[in-house]
Length: 379
Image (tube, rainbow, N blue to C red):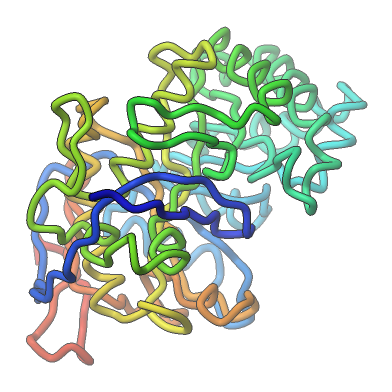
């Protein structure tokens, strides 16, 4: 028997539907995790806290633990300067507040790209995220929707004008999952009819420029929005077996189901094999429903493993940015303050291991859940 469940965005109360059976919570929690060969995982560097370390220390933190991909939400000058010669690949954001001017003034787009990217040749820029979670059906951002595509086009023109960036930096935008209309089964995923006029041209832009779609994906909000039908184990990767089957593909976790519904929707909108990058995903460790250290640790540690494999519909590495680097005490509601992998004093929360590129970093536990340390594996 299947039940309707509602999946919520991190920043809105909009929802879409998917179906799953109820599962019992899997109680076994893992004390420590070791993962090797991870090359697909980065972290989001949010700065909405009054107790966070300086950007130079944050970059050193990433380097110490071989986190070699970072998402910045705006062109923070101190962070960009600190990233020089770090070898960290950067997704840099165009704030929503800049979209209208960028859409209306191509010259400002040139200034933005040259001032924030071209002037820093020692920074490895990877993506420009033009706007974050703008939607024509979200009352808070709907007025910005007409500016997203023109802003992307003007930023793209400016990028192409810079020889150093033209073949390496991709221009995209970050969406939330409320743009999805149908999502069950995942193979039948499709976008809402009332956003197609807005979003189909963006899909065409991405296809024409060989750029990925950026998506913020949060199983946490799906679980707390409908805990009766969306089991905790399904949401945090601990279900003992497939929860749903779709054309012979088994779905053991909600993350896969959400991603494959998005892939199907993109394909129906003319995206074909368009790449999707998970630009945010995470689980808070305090401040709300199901916000425990164990739940957050399970989500992040199993996510790190899982994205190396991809989804049932799209096997292979799935580039993913964990939200977020630090707890941010200026955010609201309370649970929004507790998404960090690290406390503001740079101490890690969880026993995890991230191994990337030529090095590796471990977060390890001494067996006491209140005493955690993150050490490099070559120490």
